[in-house]
Every structure is written in C-alpha cells, then in structure tokens.
Image (spheres, rainbow, N blue to C red):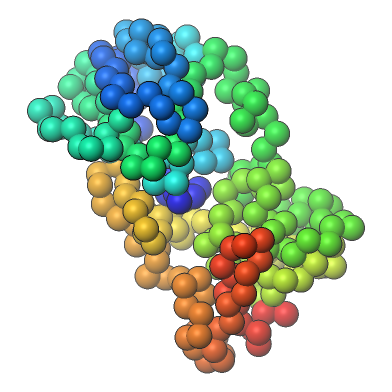
Length: 271
C-alpha cells in the first residue's frame, strides 16, 4: 500500500508537469472506485487550471479556483505521466489531459483508491479534518507524542500508527522508526518517557525523509509517476527480515503480530 513517502514522491513527481496547466479533458473509464467518482467531475474540471498539487496525510490535493480534487491511491493505485497516443492499460481508470498535451493517468488494479471533489476548504473535508499533524512539519515532536500517550495502554507501535495521533506512519515505517529509536514495539504507549518520545519523533522524521529520498518502498506494486519502483526496501533494517541477524547486534530478529500487522524487532537492541 502506498504510504506517506510514496504519496509524497508521487506529489513531487507530478507537480512540475501539471501545476499551472489547464485541464483540457477528463476521461473516466471506471467510475466505481472505493467511492463513486463524481458523475460531473469531467465537466467540473474541464477548463480549470491546477493551481497547486499538495499532500495531506496520504491524500493528494489538486487545488483549482473552483475547488479541490482529493485523490487517494488506495492499496495499489499509482499516478503516471503518460505520452499522447499511449494505449490505455486494463487498470487505467482515469486520464486527466492538459492543454500542454500532458496526460496524468490514474491506475488502480484493486479499485480501493478514491477521486473526490469538494468546494469547501480541503482541510475541512470529513476525511481530513480530524487527522493528526504531519510528521515532517514543526507541529510534530516528542512532547506531543508524550502528552497524547498518557494513560494509553496500547502498544507504542499501534499508537504511532494512529492517524489521529500523527499521519503517515504506516507499518513499514513504524517498524523501522522503533528500531532506530531502540524502543520495543510492544511497550505500552503510556509507559514511555518524554526523552524516549523525543528520540522516537526524530527517528520517525529521519526514516520518512530517507524513504522519500529513495522514492518510497516497493514491496508489492508501488511505482512513482514515471512508472519506476522505490528503492527504500534496500535500506530496511527490520521489516521483512524476521529470523535474520540484527544489523546492530547480530541477534536473530523476532516477528510477532500487533493489531494483525507484521512486526519485526530486535529483542536485544529494543527495550
């Protein structure tokens, strides 16, 4: 599933191609995604200029003078810049064609993605308004995590994966950040000190920034706007390495399930 680094990679990749460009045509081949694509989306967007492309959590926001299109990649979706004349693939559900002949294609084999429209401020949309802070912005820090963790008995891994606490810390990156911070993922969130949360917040930032620099993680079917895979998988220290030696102490890594998600950690390096 595309997580924050993959969505940020996509955002940075497509923005230079379509910001300031006018939508010439919208071709909707499959309107039934996670939620139905608005029936009049092609009429709404045609003739509008894309003022900016940004990201909030795992949503891409396409801002225009008339409103904002929200796009979620779902489990297997991707956005690609296509050349005129290319034949549409089986899962190419929507094409956004611009005046400069750029084509932005939304591909989604499992159809768990979403394309929505709102005329209200995007931050007030029901899917966005209750989300936690962005982990790469100044509002996110160890003090915030510590204050929100008080009296919380859930595992710290589940705590940092809660989008109401902080957005974008998916399973892969939670595993990696907790290893980097030396915190065992089963520890109760409410029993971790401020100093350790300060370190964890910094590790979350570092792991996400590294993943963005590498273009995200390819474990199943994520590709960026050019159809290329991400390479952060090559830097994973714990996720997907159960039973292999820890890069820190050489002890075998342990795999358990927390909230039905694969969780890999080092019983020696993480306390």
